[in-house]
Length: 334
Ligand code: TRP
Image: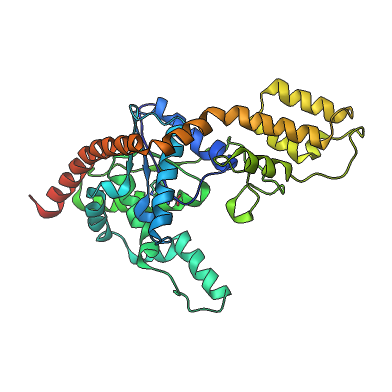
């Protein structure tokens, strides 16, 4: 339940989202803007530089993600939308938080541990290629969250630990000064959101290379849809819909009556794989046509997007300045 709550989500600009990201994370997070008390979405560009240093790529990915969120229905009148790097108070708050963050927390953080494990598996020194940005990124993430008096952080499973670290840091600061300086955030993880399978049947994920891209041209979308795995049953052989991957994906995008139609057609041998792939393609296009068009519009009118982000940063800084002031008064006594 997010009514009356302050909700915040950070998005790393690391490539365009695919159908699974879009339906499973982006859309639900944006939709929370309608009922939250305060709804914040921001582009975590300082997080991105830990992994990506190329200015052209960074610039492009920041622009793309900004356009995608607006195209997906983020309403700048209801939600505060900004670039992290436009709100310097977050970095000052990060500095205060580091003084209350046990180093051991960072050693245990998943992202860092995963990087170390990868090095060990490759026979490299533990910290090979790991920068301090990656190592301490849970502190910056804690500042992202705590700066805005966040109650709820909707996240994927992999981020729950980081929200817990933010909560622990806030708790340590509140305990030390004996007052509620910082709101204790909670991760919210929605189990009801369907995991959408990729073209090979595993969870759709960029790292598996099995995605259905959304914000590419029609030909690229079509190619992905037609690469969804099937067996070689002929059209007239009855098929169990639950064993048909195209049908699994279709369920996530098509209206219930259409889904029923596909199930019936498969069961009674009226629909072949070519047919159902076309149905899937049509359903995806129908479900996302408005967004894909809006995305292209924003990409070619980026000045409008820039204005929205600038206005968002002004709103964000007003909140951030108050949190920073509250902390400084506690820390320095004036
Ligand atoms: N670490 C998050 C990710 O990798 C992105 C992020 C940065 C974030 N700051 C945040 C998410 C604050 C929620 C709240 O996806």
